[in-house]
Amino acid sequence: MKTGTANLPLHGGSAPPWLFKRMRLLAGEIVEALVYERGSEEFLRRISDPHWFQAFSCVLGFDWHSSGTTTVTTGALKMAVSPQRHGIAVAGGKGKTSGKTPADIQKLGIEFSFGPQKIAELIRASRLSAKVDNALVQDGYQLYHHTFLFTESGEWAVVQQGMNDSFARRYHWLSDRVKSFVEEPHNAICSERQEQTVLDLTARESEENRKATLDIVRDGPSHIGFRPAQRSLLDFGDSRPSPVPELSMPRRHELIASLDIDEVGRKALQMAYELQPSNYEELVALRGLGPKRIRALALISELVYGSSPSWKDPAKFGFAHGGKDGTPFPVDRETYDNSIRILHEAVEGARLEKKEKYEAIKRLSKLCGESDLRG
Image (cartoon, rainbow, N blue to C red; front, side, top):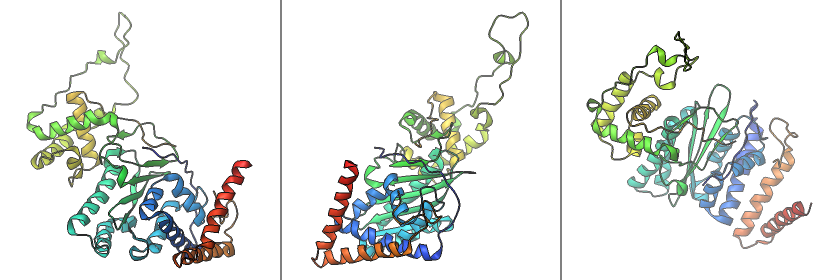
């Protein structure tokens, strides 16, 4: 189900107001053309593809490693896309704005004449996608940006991003690819580097651990005795025969030894036991069950049942108008404005059954592609 990978090195800089204004206009015209040609669901499919998203941001004026590629591009989309005009709504954003996503979905859902149940489903999808990438994919990247896009037919996509001390990581979701929120739900995860150790409870290899965790939760903490086998000093010695035992302690403790399972694990178990979730997805959705408690439950499940979770990182590792930081060349304002005008006139002309210019653009694109192949 993976569509591809993207390598995303990063440097600083911000989009100046004169450029962001054009980004918003051009984004609106590109969405207009795409929706006219292929429909709003096709837009969701493309925005959830990391290659297309990256190309889209470059066309708007980013180079491939500009800071703000995710946040500013989705911010421009939120301002440019209209439920009435495009049949698409954009909720959420960066920082504190991401916390307003449920309210955005409520407001925009009413504009689409959605009923309370449909709005609640979309809000749940938004919250669960964020919860999964914060708690089930424990890669050290803290989410700070969450954009939730949905159509008038109720299909949705998520583009969200996390940061660690030095790097960014982007997570793409698409509703028609999500068979389960808790088993490999992503369309793609983009990162500059793969981390050596990541607790990935969404991996297919973690299925037995998820089942064991649910069993433990349903039984309740009183049925579990945390009595791991005691290790003696000789366990750390040289295994070769020797008249004198030699003690050789490891440089680093195992992860499970660094957790207070009795304290953290019992609290998480008691809270979840009282609510009796029917499946792992319901367990993850519980408020108060954050990354630390979910990790504790996963490790308890491994300790009790021997069901190991996955520790592999799920992440895998173009210019039209120049880049905002002057790479590979400064943004050409005249060309940028001309692109906005041509797209706008082409789509408006097509709507008035004057399709000649619009079809000419398509033919030109095809010819350019054939020329590239011949070259």
